[in-house]
Amino acid sequence: MTMRTVYVNGEYLPENEARVSIFDRGFLMADGVYEVTNVLNGKLIDFEGHNVRLDRSLTELGMKRPAAYDDLLEIHRELVTRNAINEGLIYLQVTRGNSGDRDFHYPPEETEPTLVLFTQDKPGMIDSPVAKRGARIISVPDMRWGRRDIKTVQLLYPSMAKMMAQAAGVDDAWMIEEDHITEGTSNNAYIVKDGRIITRALSHDILHGITRAAVLRFAREAQMEVEERSFTVAEAMDADEAFYTSASAFVTAVVEIDGAQLGGGTPGPVATRLREIYIEESLKHAI
Ligand code: PMP
Image 1 (cartoon, helix red, strand yellow):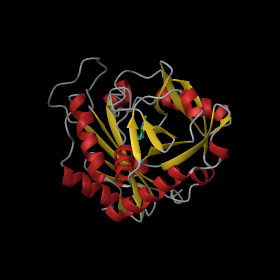
Image 2 (cartoon, helix red, strand yellow):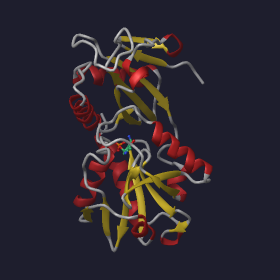
Image 3 (cartoon, protein in one colour):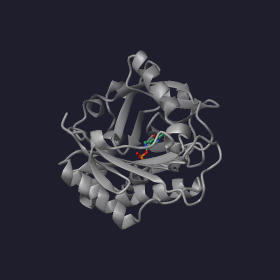
Image 4 (cartoon, helix red, strand yellow):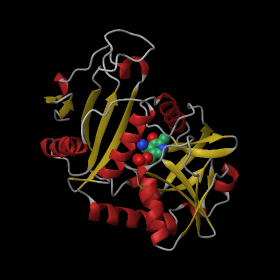
């Protein structure tokens, strides 16, 4: 792999020269938040949405904003250019910074946040093989904390759940709490029944997906019925279709849940159509 240029606290550096302190709160306490913005045709998808959610995560944790909107946009664009990203992702992380020691208490107000950004080159996202054949998933208990609406870097449980999925020979996992699906390990979950798109309502229980917001808007504009409510695994198994959304997966059909095949085992018409609309509209509005 070629050496990337990354961004750390005001500097563009070769990836092997980028440094963050061992006392950084992100490293010691997972005291950090992140965003992942998609790049298609060298342009940013829904940068605005990711910026609004970043602000919300920072506000909820009482963390300082490390850079203004225009500066963040410029850093994103600069990294796309310097790393020649055509299809890929930009990862951004903000932490509460270097407290100079390990301490549960937050560091003094004047402590500067840490800002890190790097690119991931991912050619072929639009023509993803998993999206073509449809994903197979398992359900696992949701063992995360109670503020999943804040996009923190505490990703150990989602990571464990991905490993459970891998061990089970499937693509991903959906998480269950009190018999109802919360969301996927790194995506929002949906089922389709009798033409209605059903997805859990926004609350502290799930991440407020930027792709979710866009897809629900496109679905409503296309006169599709949307119902925001919780659903069970049994309902999902009995659904006509299922799918998930995220910045990197767009809309991806689910064709098997806990070994039960859905709608003939191939991506259904609603998921397929929404994926087309989402990609088309995103390309149109990319900046
Ligand atoms: N839920 C979780 C738990 C996630 O990690 C993600 C991906 N960041 C999503 C949902 C989807 O969010 P978005 O559409 O903003 O990528």
